[in-house]
Length: 114
Length: 108
Image (cartoon, each protein chain N blue to C red):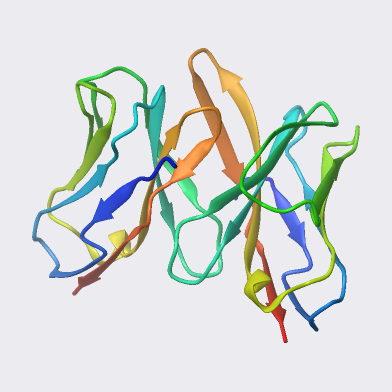
């Protein structure tokens, strides 16, 4: 139990639609990161938010966008869905302790695009 | 492009056997983490290593960070069925780069 929750757990959309995924971080964790994990692969970094501002981005197009709110919740929005967007989407909240950063992952949202 | 390659990709062993999983890159990382992920769940952090040559032990698991901070290994002694899962390494550059994963199955 990491204290990070995500909703919904599963979602089916069709190509071209838009989707919003939600994440509730641990209280006090002011950094949240989003990852895409395709079947059989490791997670790929989408972007990170720190104190409600984007703080780094991976190789994902602008149709992937996010928001972070003061209450430690965040959203991942994907516009114009494509078939290849089908994946497990993970959020991770983190805190820094000295030189180590500990990420706590949620269980993920499995998105299927038809 | 920074890549972390893990080997082997798949491993099926009998309970009680030892195994080593490798995580290799041509890039230097400021720290490296190992996670285990089970079906339907997110990855769970096992350990963070930050110093070149560092060795950390977590019960039957031994983690080593290479001297040049480009590679790492995870050694499991006397594997048990509860060790079954997807093992992921993740190197920290300006962002976390995850490896390709090693899927371990320990048979009773």
